[in-house]
Each structure stands twice: as structure tokens, then as C-alpha cells.
Length: 174
Image 1 (cartoon, one colour):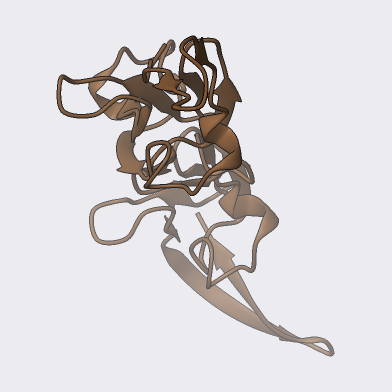
Image 2 (spheres, rainbow, N blue to C red):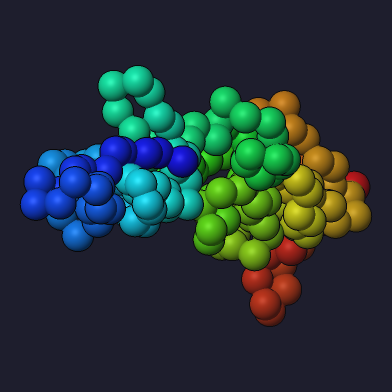
């Protein structure tokens, strides 16, 4: 709580409470006080979410940002936040490759590349895409092997011969 002092009413010998909260912010109560609450004597402040009241000998009723990122993962910020980034009154996250920021901006969720477009979100040569966390894996058709030496999810096979049908060229691979 922050306290100011009552002012003495010069017309009477006793002191009366002055409602600082009806006064001017920054003059009668602290500029950084979010919600002024009149008290007898003085006043106190309630701070918005993401802030805490910090009183010093120079200033009372001072609402300052809470840096959630210096706190404990899973308590002060989400378990699934890969890198916590403090913002004034809040925080957000940056995510590792294969993840994206959730709609609440406070955690990272796996990207399902397999729901995307072949050749854009996952390899063009991946026959059957399966989501993994993070990334994806491929299952190749018979006669093909997954070769990740140059590109992830690349199904390769060795074709021994080809034949033409009325539908076009068919490659026969082992």
C-alpha cells in the first residue's frame, strides 16, 4: 500500500481527510498509480494485471511492470514458451523452428506441416506425410526409401525399367 498524509484544514484546528483520488494525477497522487483508492489518511493504489506496486522513499503508489521472463517457467510464464520476451504489462514468446505462436501469444504449438501444401510445407517427394513434434516424417511407397541426406522427407527409388500405357509412362522401381 502507498500512503500520503492528510492535509490540515486551516479553518478548523482538527485535520480532515483529503481525497487525493479526486485530485490531479501526478500532482495529488502518483502519476503511475493505475487505480487510486482513497484512504483515511492518504490513498492506496491498485495496479493493472502485469504490474505490481513498488514504493520507494521518493515515490509511493508507483505501478511498475512485472518482468515475467525472469521468473520460473510454468509459474510466471507458460511451460511451452520457448523464449520469453517481456513486454510492458505482459509478455510474449518466440518459438523454435517447427513451432508457431499460439493464439494467446504466450506459448508455442507444433506446426502440422502435413496439413499444408506438398512441395511448400513438406517435401514434394514425400509419399505419406506424418506430423512429428517438431517437423514431420515420411513413409515411402514400396520400392522407395526415405533419403534425408540432402533434403528432409525425400523418397527415392531406383528404377530398372519403364513401360508406356495409355495413361502415360509408368516407372517400375525396385
